[in-house]
Length: 342
Image (cartoon, rainbow, N blue to C red; front, side, top):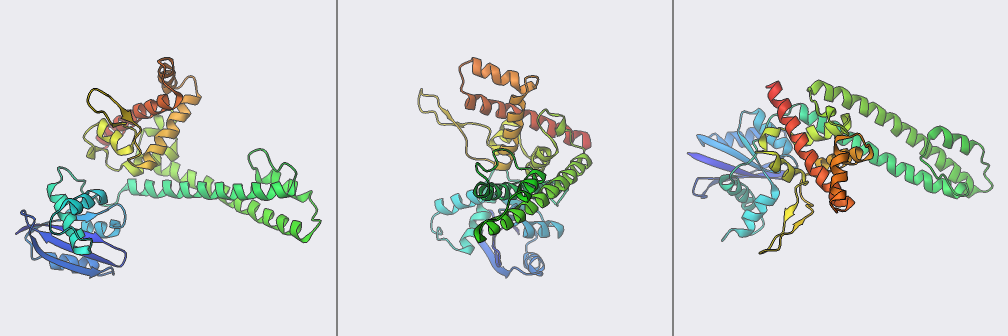
């Protein structure tokens, strides 16, 4: 029997429902999320001669289970949560929100969707994604620490520090201050601690960037040849894109990263609006690359940006157009690298 097994993953348990080609439920199973979860699922599924697994959010909550199934030699499809939700809401008779119905919706979505990404075993793109996320988290932590230090310094020094914080300069400034009260002494102690935190985060970010540079070089990617894309942005683009061949063309990739505008036309009234959809990490990486190109007059994107301004476009609209153009450039580079390494 040929079945499609939909899986609704959770932190503590996973529910699997097997359906045939007519969407009829053949069997279902709920397993506890433990070290033996895959053995239990595969052992149950061995009764089906031909089977394909469909896991909801295989890149999120279902990531570990999906990778374990792939490692066990199973074929696994990644079903976006939004797609499974639409199937459940539009379904008749079984639209109640519970784990078996959710798993059945996942299976139906995989059965009827024209093309879903197959889950692949972890490769270098996962390493780059992890490193890029770690670097982003460090950057956010540094920004929070710097803001707190700015606030404390404003209470210690008139006018505070009106420029970017440099730990050596802040230390020198703090050494020249005397505590006039218990509150001021506490502020000085907190400022000292924040300076140490800032110095530690600066060191960690430097180490993170060096590690990312090594990983990007090892991947053989040429994304850093594009003006405005350094190792950190390249790691983000590679890590969150994954296999670029899963996108049919550059338009599909632009839709995935959110640089393609959304068509909101009606009748003869043609309107395209800014997309808030898509992968926000990819969108932010393209945004930073576009902003960098705009800053330099000799960059390949500055002329394109200026032409949009001369055509009467606003600065924001011109920037969005450049991001869309960069999306195509990045896609072509990714495809070229993939073909060269294959």
